[in-house]
Length: 93
Image (tube, rainbow, N blue to C red):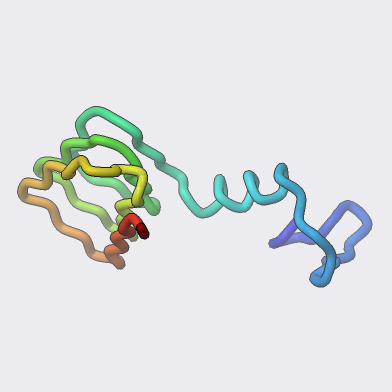
């Protein structure tokens, strides 16, 4: 679709995108999505945190994105290293 085009080779850059195509794009971007639980260790792909996740003793070789799905919760971050970019979303009221 985006990387390779459609089955007939066209890109259709001005056409509307379907929900399934958007889901595939998001899946390609975010190899690791976490809504709850604990993260430790080393992650090589982009990581999306969108829930109450505890991150401790963790290295992110790529990007870490903390999404606004947290609401009023505060993520627990302890001894983390982000070698890529750190993105933090916030709620808009």
